[in-house]
Image 1 (cartoon, rainbow, N blue to C red):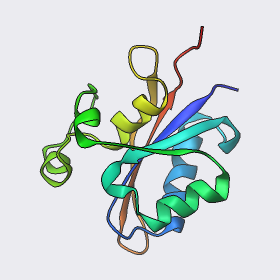
Image 2: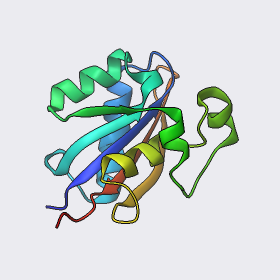
Image 3: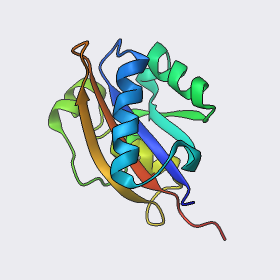
Image 4: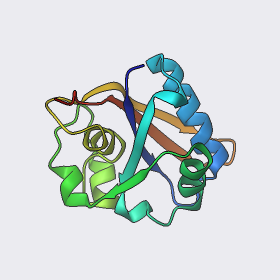
Length: 135
């Protein structure tokens, strides 16, 4: 088992089902399972996002929220100016996954930015990072 951390980004009001589908697809890409997840994270603007809170509660993984400045300080492969305009940081899911996994340079992305537009029309983005080794 390789411990992993999940980073989430989503539209406001994204249902748990859409987030769960995006997570399942990203886990499959990474060759990982829910049992490998040590934690999840997103931007503090999502701290009241019902679908995200319900998904974390369903699977029992801790959910952490980071301020835009914390996320913006993390170098990521796919920064987005659109995301920066809406959130104040060029990355939510990739940066959140890396921070939740212990941060660079030890943490590394396994799934950079898996995007899904659910049947509900809402968008979810999931990134997966391998956790930094602990001494």
